[in-house]
Image (tube, rainbow, N blue to C red; front, side, top):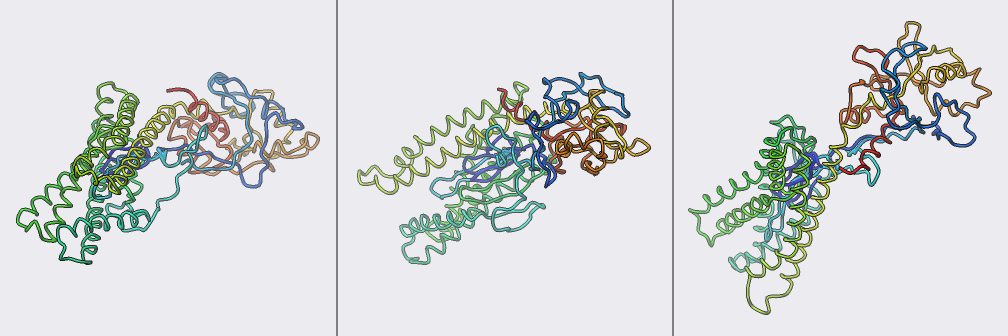
Length: 526
């Protein structure tokens, strides 16, 4: 179903974070969010430029203009890229480690949702990302929690399926509404009609699960990781953590959900033919046929975050060659669709019901409430899709090579004052402790340098201020965008050693510099 720009799809109800989620569900949507590595617990943050801090400019000095370069050093002199190769933004106080969140692409996550009016359960998919995980205005998305969110029902194809607490509320609602319909058709059932209605609610959500599994199987076929499937109030959500690589795959990923719902509707119709229409089996089969048909048709509407919106996005992407153009077009169509649902759904249901003047009552209020909820979900999902798309558009601007600070190598017993003198003399802004053979062993923490008074620096060896390097603290100079953020998210730290493919030192990457670059990129219009 439709979903936000993040991968994720879902059955009637919602989509995964802009990780995408096609499938029948109510409108809704959900990307990836960059992590914000933080400082080691217990370190006092360093505030560049704070009065009273006496730190040489070479390591903790003023922040250079964007684009100022740095270079790597394997000894006390520069050995590689020129000073203009990378920005040397002044180090900022280390931040507390925080993992990225997609919108939840987050984002979120995002994804298609499906809604079935009259059956009480729309459904939608989210993409990952994306929507979950949005960190708020000016903040990088926060890391999404581990899969969870309700009662674990199983792991088909290795993907956990959860039933959210809100599902039990909708099950009660469906049981009550469908039970009232059964009382008019089969009054002889008496109180047993509610047991039949509960069976219908479970069977309908089983159909929603099939819809979501269609998105999941397609995603796995395209090598896209699926975080989880969740059945919730307005349907289902398949949280696919990455975007499809081509418009063709995006189209297929979105279309398989409504297609399976149409197939299920046909299956229930075929099963209904030999059955007596006024029997319990006949009423159940007819209800499942109609509800699956509604889920399929609703999710084929051409607006994000519905599956039809993702299909429209794929078509515009194919024509223009620009994924962002497809997202913008499908998101605005989704917003128009939200307004149409808000106004048109109550009018439609009333005209299909009864023309009697006394028919305007509780049913009309319920129809208006359902329309308002669906419209809000579609409108919000469309907006999430746009935000997640903008996030993905700007992520490639985050390049380790451009953000890395030039570093100077020093021996473990080198006094801090001497190390800072060498750094200032060569224009470096970071210190790397190396062994006798020149192999990097640890990084001198910026926060620790700031905490040492100037009069003590000649007697403090750099080794006492250094943090031992782990494999996770070594990152390739070639990393950029989501790959860079994933690497930092997996190993939260204040600084990272950036190395060339040959293993040669390129410099030191500060988590604070990455965060500033992310915020700056997101502040620019698309």
